[in-house]
Length: 96
Image (cartoon, rainbow, N blue to C red; front, side, top):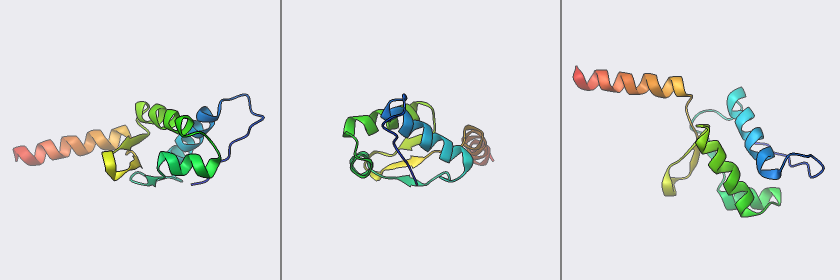
């Protein structure tokens, strides 16, 4: 995962983080199931405040791009269509 924060950009830092992770997930550079760094770890590596990265992760989770699995970490979520198909297949298998 490669993120760059441009301090001279008019977009806030959290929005830059959100947009870059979202774009990399959409492009396939970050595949479904890829484990993201911890909020603290990413904040430290980018030189940002922990709350800035936490805000970006919350926005990404609300958008369905990532999913947090409690203490197990934060991962790139499967696309909605894949999740729906998986749920339908599981329901079918249980009925059969």
